[in-house]
Image 1 (cartoon, one colour):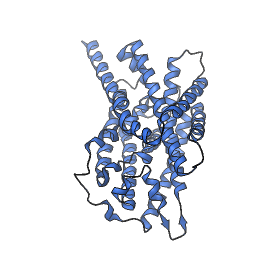
Image 2: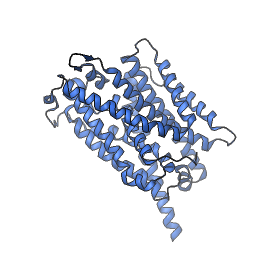
Image 3: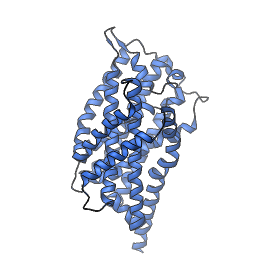
Length: 364
């Protein structure tokens, strides 16, 4: 995997689609109602700072692969243990994203199909992508990026020229009674903190200087799309109503009619959701696979690890949560505090400071 090289635009596409991921399905910040725009702008700003943090961890250490940095900072055995924890973390989050989409598809499109059937199809597709390797996922992301942007623009244009939008719904622009400070941390960790997975991928980028200069634009673009989509939903449904629905974007799209001819364009949103979900799961899975490949004996083939990771991911989707409310509660309330916080911020910052101290001690 060390010979893999991907272009700056490919990683730009991957980051953008990754951030949209399941966020556009369940994480638009509509729980704060009319104040969703503030939450989106603030979290995007923090997200830009987060990607610079991860990039600088690598830049300050000569773009060394992250697993090497873990061993340099924490020692050989502790470093390998932390790498194992990261690999398990990535697989667990991948399974949560798959569960997001299996619930979404089973409750909005294929009502008679069991969640596990959707999950196994998703896992098989991701396993095939991981079997092809990071370069294949990067090239696919490049194509899927353009398809997704076209679909998003088409949806927004049709929404704007239809009669269902009432821009009065986005007022008041700020309502202190509905603004919940507790909504900020989860919105930062999901999805922006999840970019920690790219710290395993940035090593493989050809032009790292360009990445440092322009990588943040992917975060800005994804944040802008989430902002526009959330405000459009509020304009169609109203803030109070939008906050009630589990899948508010789909509900908003169901109400769109275009010149009394084009109706029920939900399939466009489903295609868009599937694309961004696939990229997000593929990125988590390829990083988790890489971690296990580095930890396990060299005689174990990488393809076998891919299938093992796929099986574990699928089993996690089956046993994870009993129903959608429980799944959303754990994903949006429990996981950000007990998993995202240490893996996205505490460990990287401690590693960065440890490596910095060790460098200064060597100079002394």
